Length: 227
Length: 227
Image (cartoon, rainbow over all chains, first blue to last red; front, side, top):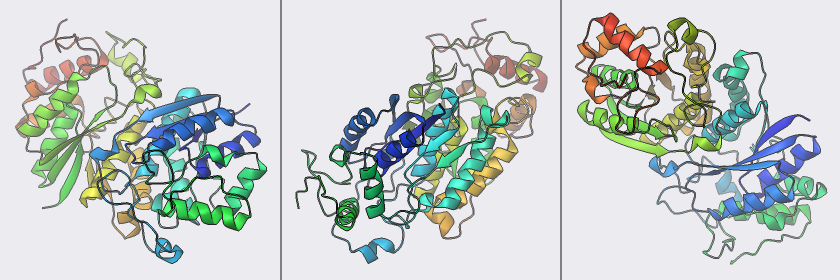
């Protein structure tokens, strides 16, 4: 069975990716990155999701991106709340973490090389996150090219693939895909700015997109929101 | 003055890079990565070198690559000692850390973006480290292409450059360059497997290359070796 490294944040999207990769027949090693995010509770969600969806081996890499800063997710910048869909669609949001997906994919690549895997799976999405440059297909194509040059396996002829099965799906389609694959979304966490008890705020971009996704999919949202 | 992010390991090569970048007129922010390396003493060397060579701002990012493993520098695999130059030249050594330079450059890219810089400086070298895939010019070219797609600045038209001033220099030429720029190599650390007091082993690949470099440059080696 081909082995894949799946980036698993603990959110709705990456849980769906893991279910997709399992359905595709990959034996999955999941990788969560503890990058100093405000919403650290998602790391616990990642562990729950990995166990529930049959990750063979769940790893956590700690990296303190606070030393780099520049984002509301890692710096002392407030997380925006209550933005409209049109305001979210305009420009790159302050929750963008500089070079985050480059760093995360590089870590997944290193792990893949250690495991002898050449398939990476990640939840990049060009529809709901059109403002994040490192969620675009052309970024992933460039990363595949880099991976071939960056690694021992690449030098020896391996061809790395970055699978982004959610790239062209809106949130409702993602929810429908995950539900059809048996994902229990109650295990996942999306909120950027949760209450200390883990309750989702209901108002940040991640909560708004999530709520809208369940609503449009016509599937009950199992999330506990404070607002 | 243009700003640059310089990857600074604390070794001979990256110290020379910092001196080169200063000579080129860059205002430099230095970045050291604490990646769980055996030779953690190099992080102290990086702080000394940053101060001595006029880094404007020295940052350290901690990332635990042990969760990925696969290298003698981060895993419980012995560091080779006493290898001949020809054996070093053959194949990729076990001290290769999977995707290390991809991860490091991604971090430098994130920091550059936060600072509004588009110049990265790193000590990759294709002569003495011909066995490391991520030390080749084609890797750096691919990374520049990726950086343009990965970042907000790139989307807005910025062109990132990765300067690798040591790419085509052998160790003796690097030592001569650094000496001409006033680098105090006594501040630097190269050994992969130092004694607890920081003394260089004198026998790992890094020590052997360093000794040979000073010898061939005709410049006294200030390093204390145990062997």
